[in-house]
Length: 255
Figure 1 (cartoon, rainbow, N blue to C red):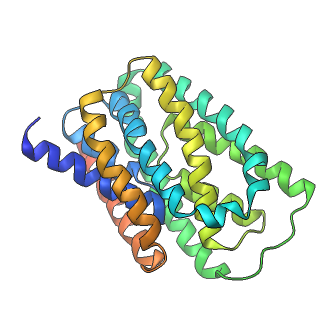
Figure 2: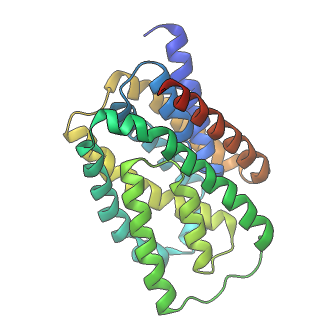
C-alpha cells in the first residue's frame, strides 16, 4: 500500500466512525473508497463491515450512560438483530460479484434517501419530548421491522442506523442520545455476526481492514462525544450530499 492509499483508508474510516456515531451511514464513505481503490465490490463490503466494527464499539462507550437506562430494550431487539444479520451476510456471499456491483449504486442511493427521509421526519416531529408508552402490538411490529433491518444490514449495511432510529422513534423513544446508543448497540450486533461470517468465509482483505480499524475506532469515540456539541442536521446534510455524489460516480463507472 502506498502512503496515499493508507491516508485514504484511515481518513475514510475515521469519517465513517464519526458518521456512524452521530448520524449513521459510515458505509457510504468506506465502501466506495475501497471500490475506487480497486477492491471487488463484495470483498469491499465485507472488509468495510469488519473494519468499522471496533468503531461501533467505541461509540457505544460514549453512550454507555444513556444505554444503561434502557436495558430492557437491549434484550427485546437483540435476537432479531442477531438472526437477521446472519441471514443477510449469507445472502451477500451468495450474490454474484457482477450482480452486487450493479446493485451497489442503488443500495447507496436507498441508504442516502433514508437519511433525507429521516431529516424530514425529525423536523416534523421535533426532539426532546418525554418518552411515550409502548404497547405489545408496537413491540411486535418493531421486532419484525428490526429483523428486516438486520437482514439488510448483514447484506449491505449503509443506512441501518437511520432505519433503527425510525424504529426506536416508532416505539416512543425520544431521547436522542439514548436512541443513538441503542442504535449503535444493535448495529454492532448485526455487524458482529456478519463480520464473523465474512471472516469465516475468507472474504476480508486483512491488511486493508487493519489499517482502517484505527481510524474507525477513533472516529467512533470522537463522534459520540461530538454528537453533544455538533448539530446533527449539518452532519446529515453532509452525508446526503456524499451519498448522492457517490451514487452518481458508481453509476457512471458501471455504464
